[in-house]
Length: 259
Picture 1 (tube, rainbow, N blue to C red):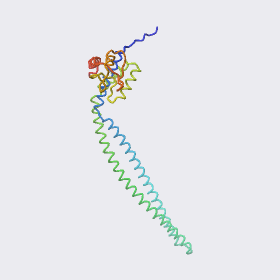
Picture 2: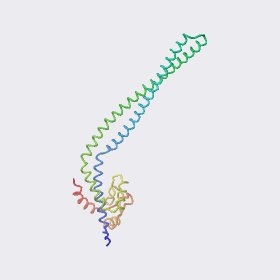
Picture 3: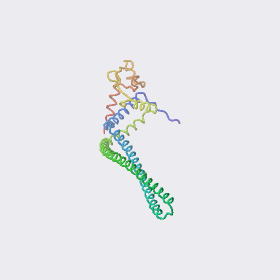
Picture 4: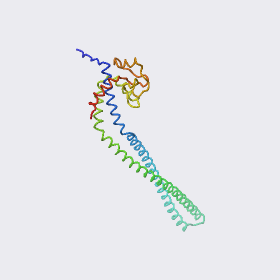
């Protein structure tokens, strides 16, 4: 035998939506107490990561320059060895032609030494400049890490104060969401996402939806109060409920979200 589908009235749907809104609004309040801290912490972490990558690049470049210096020192040592060898050979030459040929080799190796020494000076200057920049980077990274540590401690302290209540409300939000059909819940969540204050279901204040200046016509207000259909405000896009429902659910939910 097929299960009989339980038909939920529009009024029950509206009450369920408003109850969920109360829970979610309290969650918003808790998270808003943290202000910009979570964003500040994330921004600092991203900035530090970027600076550390730059520092690693400088360290790699300094190593490359030092490797170049070592290579040039090897060139100098090799050239000096050859000069000594050629000078020794000059003492045993048989004619001027051989002497001059060896002299040219010595001159060439002298030029190699001069060029290598010039390059070593250039590399040294680059290393000096890069080390100076690296020191500044490391100092900035250290300052930012200290600042991040302070901000994290501040955030952790705020989270610790409200963590149990937040966890309790998250469970309640999940629990109450199960009482709403998927399509309606999806609409509620979409409206909430697009709302600056996170409100998807609102009551009327002096004939206008809460937070709006556009007055609802009397006929439409009567329809809202009848709770026969779900009515969306054409200006704000929010789901509208009447004052009596708001007051009744606020009173009921005050005990539910009491922590």
